[in-house]
Image (spheres, rainbow, N blue to C red):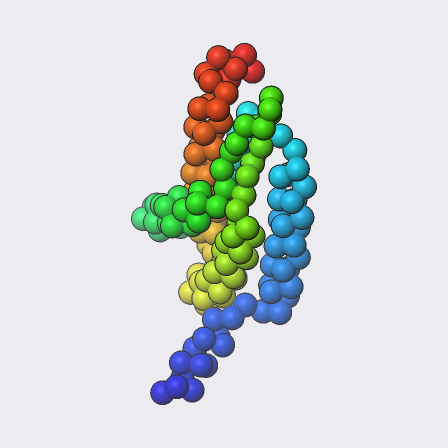
Length: 170
């Protein structure tokens, strides 16, 4: 029985290429986050990433990427509720003089690493059930839900720190 569970788990692990690609992507995200944290936060820096990411919805114009609406809703909600929550807990905006800065707890990078590990293991499992395109579509929806909720929270926090008048000027 134990060897059967081990075999099923091994079948769900992604390929070495996928693991290497994910590790390189994770490293790039960590480097980007460190560099981004050194600068002041602006309205543009909060709003533009999710808007740019929203262009990914065009993938659903290709039939191979389409998934049932219920799957899409669950993926989007899971990203927005479960995966965004740790990001919301480990980052906040603070005023430092005339600028707004992102203040992350030391747990932020641990959260990023944990999310990457969850993504990698889940991808290996879903690749055994779905096409590569459908897996990509579901993970895109997970990521978009997570980023959108996090950025909306940041925008509301930014508005509290700056006041609505400054946002109206931009």
